[in-house]
Length: 195
Image 1 (cartoon, rainbow, N blue to C red):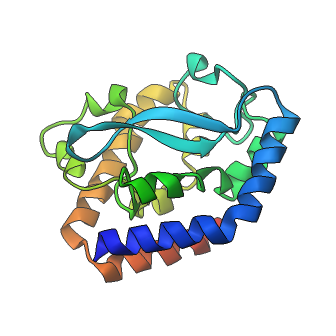
Image 2: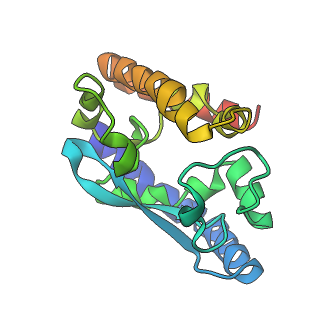
Image 3: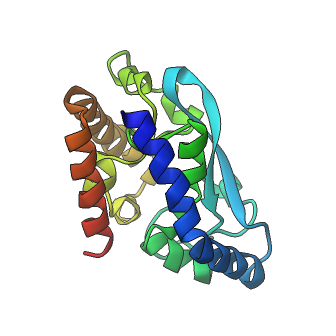
């Protein structure tokens, strides 16, 4: 049921949103140097690596300056990038990840290999399901960048505080998984974006 929902909704989502996707793609490529998409290796179900797709919101080679985005005014983010990140438009290409089966609409947000290597045995259970575009942690930590900006050591704060809290929420999702839960999270995410 969940996979059928993902396939049908991602296909029609891409179809219906194609004019918006085209406009955003043009804005990204014409207002800053670099390609349209940002691809990054993430760890998916059963520890399988895949490349997550996003509209590029940062200048090229920004990863070399760190994997975390810190604060709402990270100078690596482009002008168009600020807007598309604010309304989560940069995440829309992940509908392709959902369509091909790398991801689901709802599930634990996929992490980069560097941080997955730090998971303990209990936390690794989040890799027993397909990762998602949104989850409880996406709603709860909508302002994650601002939280990290207040820290003297953002990466350590992420590792010691934010990541464990998000993983706890991911494990909660797995224990509550149902179509009803997914719908609740999808609508909760939409309301949070426009909050």
